[in-house]
Image (cartoon, rainbow, N blue to C red):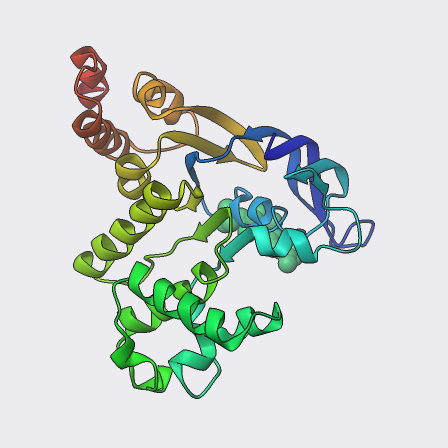
Amino acid sequence: MPINIEGLSFTYSNGGPFEKKALNDINLNIEDGEFIGIIGHTGSGKSTLIQHFNGILKPTGGRISVNGIDTRQRDLKVLRRQVGIVFQYPEHQLFEDTVKKDISFGLLKLGLSEEETAQRVLAALQSVGLDQSILEKSPFELSGGQKRRVAIAGVVAMMPKILVLDEPTAGLDPSGRDEIFGYIKKLHKDFNMTIILVSHSMEDIARLAERVIVMNQGTIFMDKPSAQVYNQPQELEKIGLSAPQITYLMKRLKAIIPHIDENIFTVEAA
Ligand code: ADP
């Protein structure tokens, strides 16, 4: 099992006066090549969960293994290559004086030759819709959307098997958002990359993910194929989503799942 999580719990400042339980008994299996959306309110544990995928955070209870590597072990170099995480506002982490150096940074640390590094940088740039004319520019000369794409390219260049993205389109305009999602979809399709997309946007999740995980107060509240989430709008009410939010989600899902039962729209009248 590529990602296998059993009884995972995590408490910040464990044992201290300010301890805060952020994850509580999470059980989850993720297969190669899945496209998963994780949604949930702010504070529901989404970020805490994804930071366990490459061992940045270690369980305070239970276990997680990724491609057979238990993240409690010390040497996580191999794991870090297999799991790429694009954090929120990743452009804040650009620091080199050229785009090329920024995207190459991780590759050079892997000890790849200059030639292979150059090839991977170009491929990564292409996968986010940029061309090589941008390579010698300073990241700081770029537009917000371009910076975001360069930052994503830096993670994609490592060719991770699993790509985790935390709100990758936050703060972008609708066309910038559509572009980024288009590139993510393509990575998923072309390389069979496992994609784990965290968002609080129903719209994003509904139109992209094949499986939806809804988190609530540090637990997995629902974990279903998109089509089944669609069939249970009343469940989403229980975690405080408003009727318009649910209706909107249902409509988006309807657009991607044509054969769905119309009766579920009764929630709209509620
Ligand atoms: P989400 O990503 O869904 O917004 P988080 O995983 O960031 O949720 O947060 C889960 C819970 O853990 C929240 O109650 C949050 O306040 C708490 N939390 C997150 N980060 C820290 C931290 N560094 N120290 C203490 N508590 C934290």
